[in-house]
Image (tube, rainbow, N blue to C red; front, side):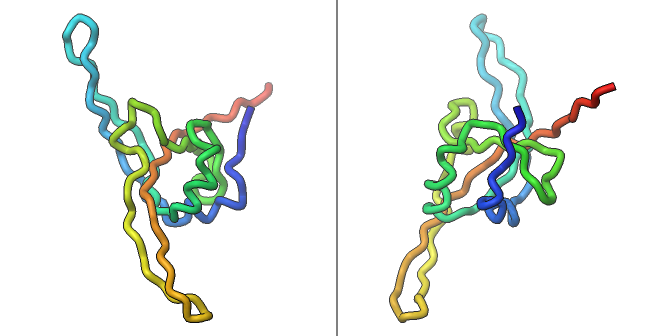
Length: 123
């Protein structure tokens, strides 16, 4: 089943940066080192509030639209294989609302695994 990335969250991917995740090899049961793996990913800085809203979409594969059409993304949250890329602190910004109230927006850095997808064609 194809799950499409929700349109209301498409803006979160607008400034996404394509990066390579270099995953250190795990040691096999016999003590020999495993093979290092490199995965394509999207690195995105989003507000803590937006992250809390998309949290239920984590660890599932979605098809985004726009410039990432033809790809699939998976939000990394608690997968132990990707612990180095779990959401991390993205800083904060102080702002002033139109009414003059000061507020702080907190940000997190998140990563989405990025995969090419192949569509099957019926003959």
